[in-house]
Image 1 (tube, rainbow, N blue to C red):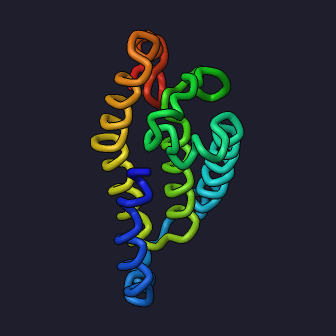
Image 2: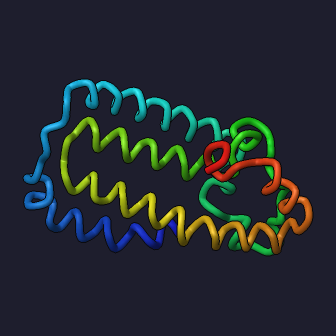
Amino acid sequence: MITFFTWLPLAYFLYAKRDLLLSFRIELLYILNIIGIIILVLGVILHFWTAKLLGLWGLVGLPEVSIKARGKLVTEGPFSFMRHPTYFAHSLMFTGIFFITEVLAVGMITVVDILLIHFIIIPLEEKELLNRFGEEYRLYIKRTPRFFPHI
């Protein structure tokens, strides 16, 4: 939910200035274009996998909005090896799109997106999850890395 309201004004700005923003490109090695396709596909697969586990309401953040929708802590599938596979998947997709399109604005948005997710959105979400699930989430944090082991 936070992500939606964070990106909505930015999306409008990008749409309004799209011709200017899309004109700045950088030339990447061809292999990075291929890697971009692979990263994008992996991100889409991971995103669909997490969406299947969370369901539509969990994916759009309904449990965070509704006190009655407590739900259960999801720890299976991709959540068994990382705490935030949805954010990781969407960062992979942004990175892949940047490598494919070579548009500088996409690269800049990717960096801003990763920084916002890592330093603002995830800490807020984890605080909310600790309030909602307590000790169960504390134990989950201890045994499951945020994105990768030791990162």
